[in-house]
Amino acid sequence: MARILIANADPIERLILIGSLEGAGHEIIEARDGSHAIELAAQTVPGALVFDEVMPRSGGVAAGRTIRRRSKTQVPVVLLVSRANLGEQAVRSTDAILAKPIDPEELVATVNSVLL
Image 1: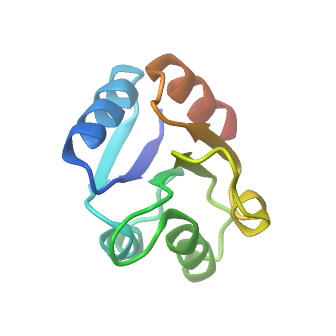
Image 2: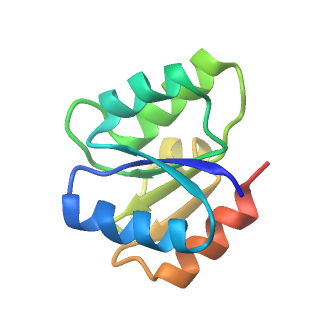
C-alpha cells in the first residue's frame, strides 16, 4: 500500500494510529512531533500525512504546509482534531479532518480515500 507519516505527541495515540494503518497494509513512519515529522519527510516523501492538530515544536497544519512546500508535492494531510471549531486556515490546509477519539475503521477509510 502506501508509506504514511504519522505525527502525534501522545505515544498511546501513536500506537493506535500505527496499529490501525499497519493492519490495513500501510508502511508507517513515526514522528513524535511536527518538527520531527518535517525532518523525516525530508528523507523520504510519504504518500500521506496523519498529523495531530496540536503538537510541540510545530502543529499539524504548520508541519503539513512545510512538508508540502519543501517536497513540492501536494501530499495529502489528514488532521486529527479535538476541537469541533477549526479555523479556516486549518480547513484549507488539509485534505481530511477526523475528530478525536479516532475510530480505527474511519481512519483507514479516510487515509485510503486521500491517497494520491
